[in-house]
Every structure is written in C-alpha cells, then in structure tokens.
Length: 525
Image (tube, rainbow, N blue to C red; front, side, top):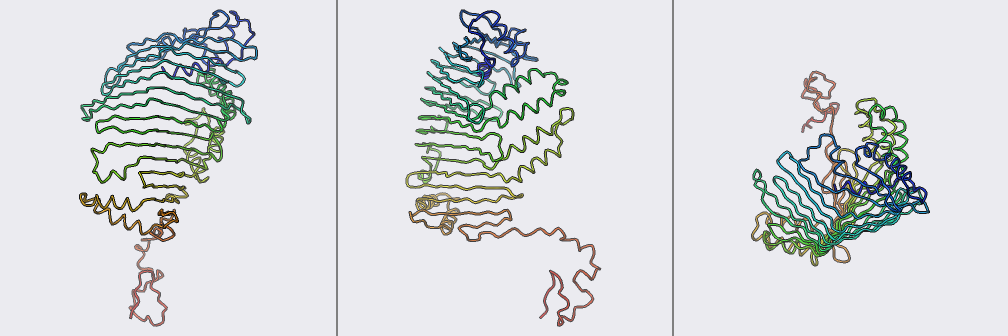
C-alpha cells in the first residue's frame, strides 16, 4: 500500500486546472481527465471519486475498494481508510494540493508457507504543494509526519519498523533541453528496524536490528520526461484490450520514442548518521554511512555510478583473531560503475523492430544481434578512485575493464600506504595461523613487484589483456595464452599422406636439409 499512495498522489492532477469557480461541472471534467490515467472503471467501482468541498475539489482514493476489485485477490483481511487530496485551481493554471495523510492499515493473507500479515500507521501526516500540469510535476511541496510504525509477520520471519518525526521537500522547474529538472529531500529521525528470523528447516534463528537517529534522502534529476511518460500511461489505460493494443502499436512506438531518453540524469543518496547493526556476533556501526546511485538516461554514451562511503566503522572483534584488528577498515570510500553504455541504439532498434502480432514480438536472432551491437560499442566497467583505511594503512584502487572478446582487457592501479604494517600484521598472524604462515611469503613477494612512490607509498599497475597476458608495473607476470590451432589433430586420420612433412620411409639422409620434418621432427646429431 505504501507504493500505491505516492503513485496516486503523483498522477492525481495530470489534467490542467479549470476556471477558478469550483462546481459540479468542474468535478465531472476533472473526473473525466483523471480517467485517462486510472481508467473509467476506477470511478465506476468507487475506487476514485471527485466531489466539491467548499472552494476545492476532493479526490478520494478508496484503496479497500481497489483491492476488492483486483482479480483473484486472496486477502483474508484488509482495512484501510480512504485517502483524500484537496485540490484547488490557481489563476496561473496550476493546482494547490494538500492532504492529511495520517493513516492506518492492516491486511492478512495465506502465503505459500502460512499466514502472513502487515499493518502500519502514519501519525499526523500533512502535505502542501503546487502541481503544474504543463510540466506534469510538483513545482514545490513540503510534507511532514510525527512518526510511523509498521509490523509484518511471516511463518519464518517477523519485522518491526518505527520512525520518529520526518520532513520532505520537492521542487521542479522546466529543463532547458525538455522535460523537468527536480530536487527532492527527506529526513527521518529515530529509524529502527528489528528483524527476527526463525527457520527450523535451515536452523537459522537470530535477531537483527538496524538503527539510526537520522536517515536522510537526497535526489535530483535533469530532463525527466514527465509528460511523455504520462502519455504512455494514458495509452496503456486506453488500450488494455490485446487486440486494440496490437492495432495501435504504431502509436505506441511513437509514444515510446517521444519518451526517450526518459531522463538526462538522475542521482540519489541515502545517508545514515551513527548507524548501528545489532547482531548475534556483536554490534557493527558507522559514524556516517552513505550509499549513492546515479544513472544517465538512454543515451549513446551513458554512465552509471555507485558509491558507498563510511567513516568511523566499528566491527565486533570477539569472533576474529587479535592480529586482524590492525587490518580491519575504519573508513571506506568505494566508487564504481559503468561508462560508454549505448542504450539509445538498442532502444530505438528494438522499438522499430518489435511486432506485437508476432510471438515473440522480437525474435531470438534479433536479440542476439542487439547484444552483439551493444558489446561492439565497448562498454566499460569503471572503478573510480576508491580507498579503504585503518590508521596509517590506506589501500587505494582505480581502473577500468572492457570485454573485447571472451576475456576482459583491464587496467587497475593499486597503491598502498603502510604496506609494512600489513606485512607485520600477517607476520604476527603466521605465528598462530597456518594459512597466514603460507600467505606471508606471498605478501613479501607482492612487495617486490611494487614501485616506490615519492611519498613512500607502493604502487602496482596491473594490466590484463584479452590474450591472457598479465603485466605488473611493466614486468610480464604471465604471457599470452597458447593460440588455439583448429587444425590440431586432423592429421591423425591421414598418416599415409607423405605431404604432411614426415617421411617414414627413410630415417635417413638429413645432410641435405631437404626434410624439415614438421613441428614434431627431431634433429639428428
């Protein structure tokens, strides 16, 4: 249900605002316009209802009626009050939107492993915003909650989530290159999630708890194609019948092309302050933990990026040998992703080629050629500058990898500060750990390949080629793989053919050099 409400909220005012006079005729016109995106049956079955309330329209969403209308729904229990938006037309053609979304809901159903249930409450939820139909976006908005709780129960797992007060904001403007640029922020206090797993079949029985006094979310996007995406939704609602969809697939293709590139760029980040994980082996934690994701839209040279950053990491020591403590990371900064990703060519070729009158709409041969074209553009796996630290020890890495053939072609640079301290820790571990005793000579050998930098760090530039060769700082560590000779073994069935370079009839006269013997010939003294 937590996914349904934001969807309804985002699409509720896709129609332009009408005259400032709020009346029954305006309510009917708003209902007709909303039916483009929700379907007329949503109104016929009471899922959606638009009415006049003072100087505004009330859009009521009855989620219970929606669930009841779903085919083959097997819920044993479902309770949820209707959700309502108050919308008022503004003189500039946009809408004022407000809602009290304080809510409670619960449901039960029989899952494959027994009874499952969930319930949640949202306390004192309020939102005020302005929606611009010309942009199909909320140009401004703020919301707040006093707290939230959620519980779920399954046969082998149960979870309890709670939060304190939270706030959120959103803003959007027209993008210079089409679509919408937006920013969104959210902060939630006192987030706690407790999970208990009890599975007799696997023997798993343990609790987990995730805690943070402050959870934050930041997101931004450029050139999001909101209106073309809404047009696609309207097309889907209007063409639910399979025969009608097939008949109108030319329009579908046109709408899909108009929605490209979907967005120019979107980025998001989750932040956790004083993050803790309580587990049976002890407490894990971080003073600050951030996870980020960014992705270009469908383009010919797209990028995707992931980041994981943590400071003040703590890891329970009781299950680890004491000598490992100096090697446990306290700070990490990991950056990785992909580049030179051509999704534009793939998308446009697929849109042009698919035919809903065929089964499948795209042939297997076309799919294979599409993948081959994608690989031919040489997309990259990229490791941005990443570090792992503990005290005076820091390991840094960056590089990239491509796949010109079956094997990768990669260049990775690793540099380490405090390598001697790593060796000292391994040396200490070798006194009591047989595996470390075996690894210790390897650590010394690796040091020998390193290049000393002016600041005292050691650097290894590792190159692996598609031919199987590996070099470290220019020194060949492994040569190319042996070439595969497709003709190998074919002569086994033609031993009588003297033209194969061997002469079984004479052991003889090698002095003239005329018999070169072939690859396996032996020179006589």
